Image 1: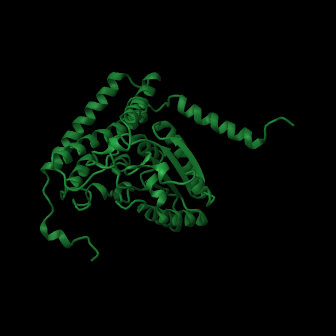
Image 2 (image 1 turned 180 degrees about the horizontal axis):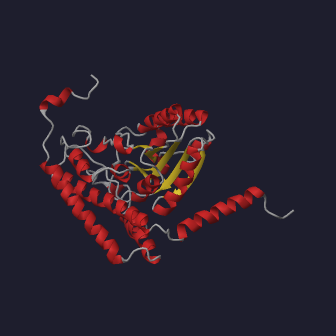
Image 3 (image 1 turned 45 degrees about the vertical axis):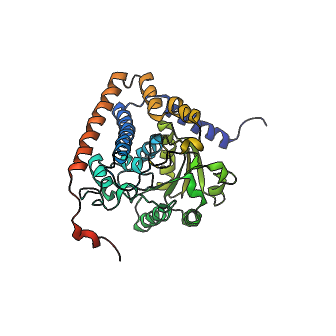
Length: 345
């Protein structure tokens, strides 16, 4: 017989459905514009964070998320407020996408008592429990255990909550990730491992540090996998929605590989990036693959928004961010008496 199998036909229908979701404008234009606003909000936040560091107003280090906005926003768009996320040292975008306020985030970055962690977490340790953000983590791959534990908690409590665990491709070298993926698959836990492959482990191209194929690693545990263009927010949201649904239905964990790119160096003090990646490469991603520009063009092509309307959104976000920075700068530092508060030893 030359006819296609039932499985093949079903897969074809699913692909057509995904294409339709990407190609046809949603009736909910307001949601599209909010998605765009969230991406711009992350970009503008990072611009201010970079300036605060370079003008010596912010202590410690910070790691920019600019260029990767579509991953955080697309994934969180598929989550409910009571779903959980865990984040990384490059976590500002995840925090904002899950609903964090810019003023409280800037206060945290600046070490102020008004911040999410009373100024004690700083750039790499922001948590926002009210929005399901269990925290950023400076340890590479360190939040994988937290995410898997949260998924186990949801299972034991009998809820249908889902956990999204963000990490970079550098975490593929950490043993903890494989230990918890093994447990998650054995126990069919509702966790989505989101690998943001921005091509570089600190200062080294991932192909020089990662043997084999990335997706072969979760597949070795029998974990369901998906791969997506991390610069296409609609694609990320569509694929993530499918993974979230299977997790809610008790079908176990999944692994989402998102291909993306960081515009800045490994951290704001990384002025050597010209030695490990070319200016032409950076220019290509900024001019041809920018997630905000791509989504803005998509919205205009489908008459969901005009260029002026998108410009208005950006202006509103910039005003919001400037007020948030002022709030953070004016906020008081924690009292010295708090040095032993909220610590375990």
